[in-house]
Length: 191
Figure 1 (cartoon, rainbow, N blue to C red):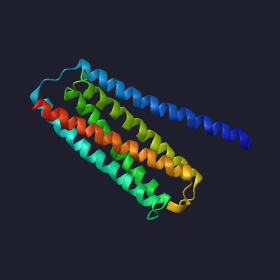
Figure 2: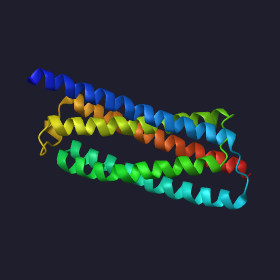
Figure 3: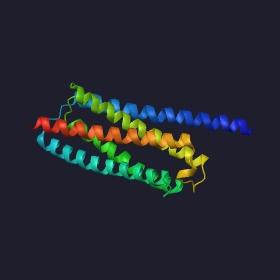
Figure 4: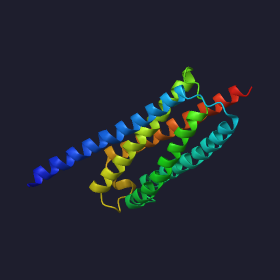
């Protein structure tokens, strides 16, 4: 096998793996949306457990996302190395994925109003944060392969710098937007 054959094979695996990452997230999201429409769970005990699970998952997941973004910012300004960010983000990914799973599962039992524009927009934001998380993880691993582990702020290629900033802005916007809509919806239900 020549170097070119290896590069083509490796690139093909990455593209197929990326497509699977995104398709699996879209599929999971679609299952949750359909389940929320089909399974009306009206038991108050289930609702309480779901609300607790939802709030805890949000706190844990969003907290981990904030830490990853803070590490990324510290890397961009030169206070952390790429290796530091990759190590932290890899660990945080497990926490974030588990928390998003908790949010999705508990969200079904919270009877979201998917007929309202706000409910629909929240679900779009959830999909965006799931897809952005996959893209950000892939971007970070791509940088790990192409940049030295001790790379800091001033040594980051401009295109990578822009990608990191874009991923962080999309992440924060989608999380804050979904949280705000959830809060507004909850307040409106109880007034």
